[in-house]
Length: 464
Image 1 (cartoon, rainbow, N blue to C red):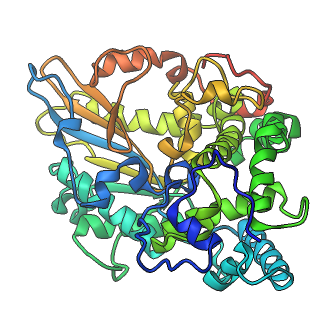
Image 2: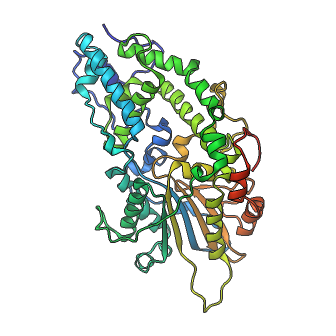
């Protein structure tokens, strides 16, 4: 007896190996990258956004730097807001994985040999422990080392060994262990070390640009169930139920043994084992691409309504980080006498997906005309707000300030690719034009006023 597979589904060859236990799989080629690898939301590998890195982790494309060719420009400052690298699951998700593991073990012992559950049990062992709790993994250190080397190749005058050794580059980090470890790995990359360093790098300044410090956000969004009602509706809606039912049938489970939370645990097991071990896990074959798109959308709804454009206060909670970025740029771009010291070449800040998303929201990026909801999944297939593309592990938001003939210019890069500021038509507009674009935030966006005086009222169409 085999798990039910709908005729319309595209089942990977390796999945058939799980279904048909008498079929020898040794001669079949299983690809290194799962067919659903690009849909893991914030648990996506950086390589899925930049697949050329799978061939060469040091690959750099200098054409992404686009100051006007007619002007002589040179980069004078880089502010980088970077997410930590690949990590272990948090305790919350490890406990879900434990429950899923127990379910597989219990049900496999009752089912026939040759069932998909039986094969899963024989091919996979539970190895996650609660003490792992979100810590950076070896692959995560590599993510940051390699990113540092690529950025140093793009900006040799700013991220030079001399500037590193002279401590002219400032490093800031969230207090979370995975972020501090990511800073250390980034420093190792700049210093040219290929393996774990000796701890001789500068300790980063611990800076919490956290939405959790914003009372308006905590009360209006974090603790307010109605703020994320779209997520709950979709979680228990028709699309998710169809994926849950199909997966349950494939596994041969009794009705409703596989809850929505355990369904997500199975999906993310594929992502964890890919990002931690570069392993094509047997869990990956449970899902086809249509399933993965539904599960990605559920994750995107959560990030949209909890961290991004869904509520005005989510973006405003990033006011301190916004002002930090522009203070650094202002200082680097102001005219100075020949006798004055040159500006700080770079400011590197390590944080979380929850650090980048509110800032991107505040800057007006990735804002679709129609917000994603529980009821418009099909019409949202072309949305720009896809966290798998925006905030994978090691995601980065780079502000590059140039000294040019007509005055300072600013270029924005997201995950090492050019991005334009909303409403500005140049890749590297004049810095004064960028400041004019965000004048209302530069003159306002007061953290204490916004966070003490606002609630998280739902206002998806309110312009910041």
